[in-house]
Image (cartoon, rainbow, N blue to C red; front, side, top):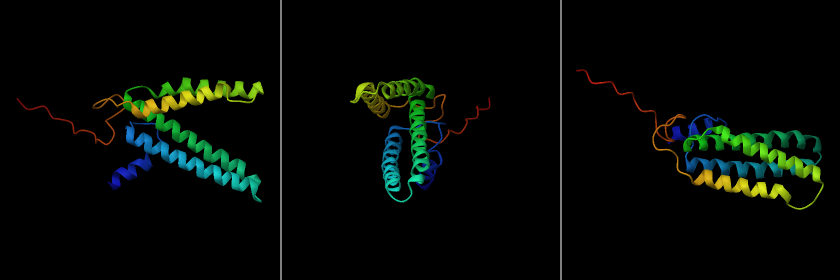
Length: 155
């Protein structure tokens, strides 16, 4: 049990390997709680006597949360048998929509709200789809040690 916990923390910011559904949801929960706590700290610093510290701390915390979420999604895609590059078009689309909304100057939800809905749908699908059975090109199934190579029987 201790080895699994150590492995969880050791591979948290790695995009290599596979991640099962339970680990995906656990990492997502960890990311959510860390983002809330970090956001609270940034708000507290900006309203206290340390407003100069809130921006770099916010960038570091939210940057770490972004990388954590990206690695989590990539490992989950690996478990399903898909390339982690499947995340790239979604990120690009979100970036373009966000920039377009910034430039529009309009209030309201707009296209960013639709992208949030799409992101939620993709997150639910990633957390619900079963992984491939047995090893795939991204490694062994989550929680399963690499199988010992079998020696051919001598004739």
